[in-house]
Length: 225
Image 1 (spheres, one colour):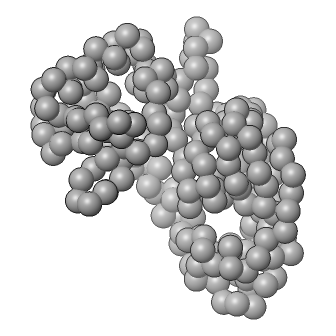
Image 2: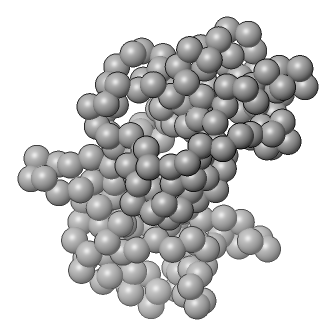
């Protein structure tokens, strides 16, 4: 990973949901085993086929989980943002990474190696529960993507990534982070041109509103098109 490691404070650890329930004594012990790293845009944090040796927690920035299809084209499986973590599945079942994780903007990450991760799981029930919740969430997301009728048409497939990355801003769902049409295309298995046409249709139909660099999602975007 092309990054420079720096020390971590208990204040930083306490701000991470995964460690928030740890008592101060345990946080002080973690300071010695958790590493903070900066990674520039387009850094490969994990490559498909790699053996996993660390758990990573995102402090700032965004990353994409991606793999190549049978034709060698990039497919984006999901996006990872602040407070989320990745790499835990490989640490638990000792299997190689099935997809690559790459930064899409400069990131600040925390990492904890396999031995210390397993030790922390064994010693902290809350952390163990948080990791299990994360795994269950990913399974539910996979089930939703496979089974949702809304994803069977291209409008629903374009709407889903927008909903996934949206935030609540003053009572409105809004996409405030840049999400290129090319990335949406890679996430849903469509062409960039198709995504552009659908985005234009959604805008003309009043389902979305573009405000400068932000996209406001109307409640009607969840209705069948």
